[in-house]
Length: 271
Image 1: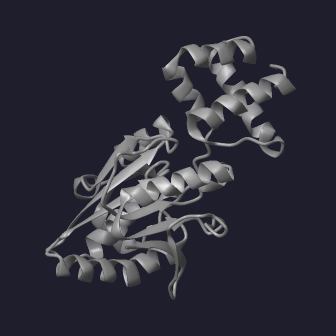
Image 2 (image 1 turned 30 degrees about the horizontal axis):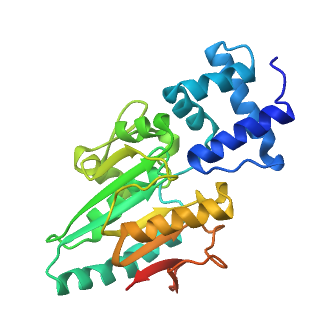
């Protein structure tokens, strides 16, 4: 059994992790970092955490693997149904009317921190179902975890992972196989998966909707504000931001307006 992180080693790793991706490890979640680093040491055969630290400093690819290892990827299809009710009953009708008034027919969405793809595919199924036939849409799905992105790109999910998908959507957008369900090309073609570190500007602009749920909780206040301000820059003049139920911009100096609907609360850019 590899020894636990010393205080000095813990400080080294949490400092470089914060610098690289903005994720903040405190004493309360130190055991998570310790466990996941030890798993990586066993996989690589590197004998000590100090040797592994030297490895990630010298090797950009191993740094990406390490960041992948320490992230949590918990998701499911149509997670937090109230957000999808808001999307279908409020956001999409508002955007369609606004776009029509400007002679536009495309909606751009970013699923930031998309994990294994359940969120962007859920959004895609909903948009396929409710958008007027004259409209098109594009979803960018990004994550820090390369392993998760590969699952999303494959579009394949075991049977236990599709329980949240309504039966009519499951029949329409997936093919059943012996051991799971494979997303059809018409669904997969609407989602573009890409590696992105929220510590940096995505380069995306004129987005209509951003989903970034249960991601900000891993950042401290300074890093949260940086991410949220970059979301503002990426969004179009009339647009919407969804964050997790346990997350809030309250007390944060941002330009976003709080929006309460009959189904859920979110934020809007309306300038």
